[in-house]
Image (cartoon, each protein chain N blue to C red):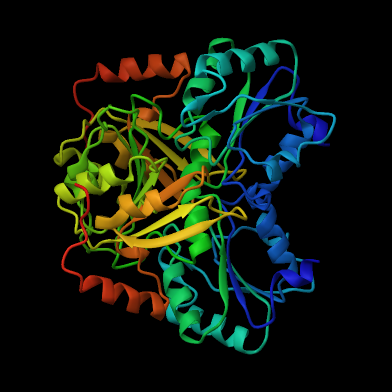
Length: 266
Length: 266
């Protein structure tokens, strides 16, 4: 049965989720098992790669901040070539392919060559980070919308973001890939009107054994992010909803609120 | 091994995903199998419920628009009671518990009684709808942010939304539960400055056998949503990223663009 999931010469873009292999979907697991070749991001960890059967070729093509194993054009080319050669291709992408996954480029390249391609969704990092912390991203009264933003900007580049709209009240903001820009993001949001005391949850390596959570305030977000030293992916969750239901947490928040100013380095 | 996943007297809030049982995570499947009782939403379909072993009690507690099987307070109470009775409790919620899942109320109620509770994330409807359509929600050049909003407003009530910030350029907007309000949402967004020709993808029953996709334009969104007659959940995806990579789709879009005005019923 597994063999029939992927026709020879076709491609599936498959969400690998945040890292924990148990957070792959049942469908993703079956697709990986029915592939003849799997192209995977550098961020897809060993636990997930262990789900690929021994006979299936695996090729690392992903990008990490600062270290590009492969350009996007080269990845597109390899997917096209493998499909044209009749392989049963899985392109395994960290998180959800449809959310900051560069899937549009790969879908377009495959469509140009009339290669059948389908997408299997994955758990996105914000969902995993919130679940790990036992928090809702959209708690009633605290958040009426949830905004996913990429915090990645190349060195020296300006962010191409509409800070005024991001500073809308009662949003939860989830910045992906915001580690090196956390301080700049905080300054821009405060300048656009957000309260420097707004709660922030920083999660590194969501869902993995090395997961670390740090609760802080917007004014201190840059310092807090810099204090987490690993190379793992980081997500910044900003908004009143990050004040969790735990009474101890609420007490800590109240005491932080009494500080006169938290803003550092803007 | 499965038995040890849930300690007696503890609760897991588990994301059931968009409906296709293959889109449950591997972890969610194992949690359901190790529960002694499963409380599930009305929207969790039969395919997912079939994953619950025969010996495990299942209790429908969910809400559907217009038909409340149980108030939120009553659901909270039942979860607390089951945990205090020593059950291994799974609360199975459609989609992702952290995104418009009312999980904050349940987490708070359980925390009040010092009942151990954890969360397993699920595939949210926007991810599943985009995957089914073979689209990225954040295509470069088309979308720099992705906004999840609930389109649910009780009859006669105003939306509690910041339309100006939602009308920010180059966003993809995903309205959950927007079926009955699609026309009002379109009018508000156009009044706030969005182009009435902006592409819209309406997906009903994402990931299920009855999935239907309708591409339209913002000015026609209300009419288009009304034309889908089923009772299934609907998601409205709005933004330039909904112009997919398929050339036929682009041609259709170009011809729609030539129409002078699409706005209907504002």
